Image 1: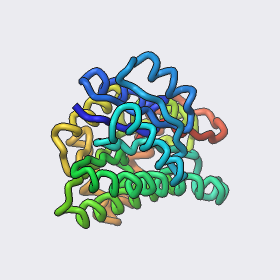
Image 2 (image 1 turned 120 degrees about the vertical axis):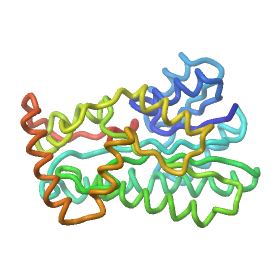
Image 3 (image 1 turned 180 degrees about the vertical axis):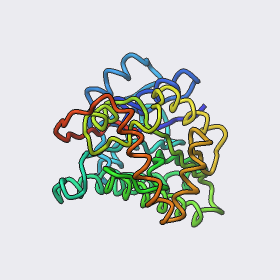
Length: 275
């Protein structure tokens, strides 16, 4: 069994992943900017779990987290880069500070983690970096402008590093979940600009966590989940005219399904990802 670090582990997909990894016998480092929430979960999970405070944008914080893990559980063998945030709203409604915040957390944060993990894993002769991305990395969506842009960038960065390191000892996997029942999704569903959220039935965090923990053993290059819907979005995302035709129609269908979204003010979460 492996020593696994999960970012954004205080809630949402990250918490579900930590629970599932411990259940399967792994030792798990629960890393989150919300260290109190991560500690509460780690206490419930027992001696196989350790909570560490981590702002994924901070290089020094990453180094401290890896050192804490090594001293308490052993060197990290699997990094699950999961933490992410969203500010809901159309692009013109968001401030540049909000656009920048998403770029810093959703793109620069995972990049910082990968660059902190890579030399450690190369030195120990093995390692596995699992990036939790999003189906929005394949297709631009209404109401998800900067969020989708960060996921496009994250997928490109992940695969570029994986190709550069193809002859090295580190394995790379990237997973694209759909909408998942987390506090982030609840935020999206409360904002009319994110009505496209209603286009599909969301999964539970536990369902997504099972796919993520499976990847520790299976080591896939890339996973879209669920597979059929994911294949359609990947294909549609290749053709701009198809995107411009299909996305407004999907949004209109989602609006009809919506029970009536309220105009809640945008808020942020840094405890896992939802789309």
